Amino acid sequence: MQEIKTETGSVIIDGNTSDGYHTFNELYHHRAVLFARICKDHPEIAWKAKKHSDGTMFDKMFIVGIDTPEGQYSYHYDLDPYWDMFDVQELPTAPKWDGHEPSDIMRVMSI
Image (cartoon, rainbow, N blue to C red; front, top):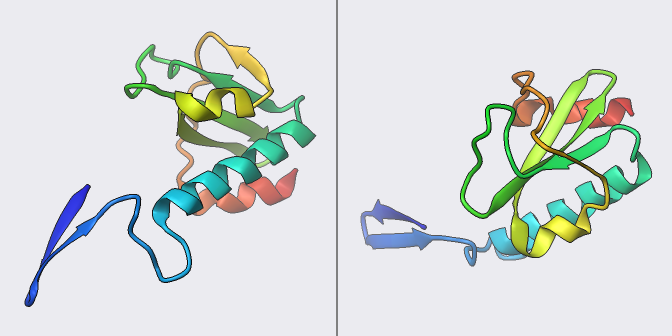
């Protein structure tokens, strides 16, 4: 949760914040469903792990990714409820991060 101060007071931004159409929580869930579908369609390049390559992980989260012809693309998700949604190979640790960033989303189009 983030609080932003404005001239007329403060605004709380959290998962229930909406753009008038969707909340952040809805969009996060939609992204998970769509990425799970991509992973299901390409199990030979998809993976999930409860640890990063260095053995660390955010509390109650996991990482899921794909190895595209242009490099990795991955997301972190909450273990509950998303772990079982990703029916892909489980690795002991994720592959070493190749430096990809959100702006590299078009890598997904190379599969």
